[in-house]
Amino acid sequence: MKEEFKTKYNPKEFEEKVYEKWLKSCCFKGELKSLKEKFSMVMPPPNIAENLTWKN
Image (cartoon, rainbow, N blue to C red; front, side):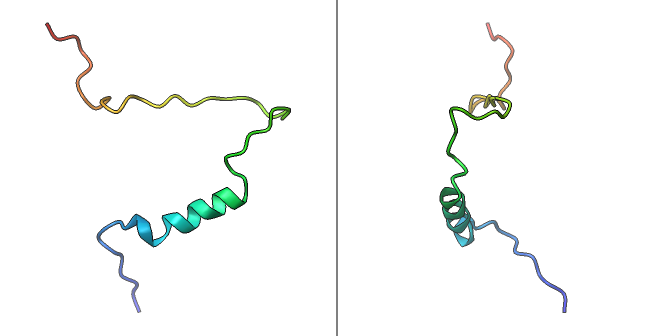
């Protein structure tokens, strides 16, 4: 039997369960004395898809 894929994404089907799992496993908890390499991620502004050239 061939499995059919859904055509629309429904986040309520699984995202709450996944997020709860992340919270329980302390995925968002930082350790001040960690010896791991530090990094940061810069998120683009919400309007980054627009043309960024100067308009006069």
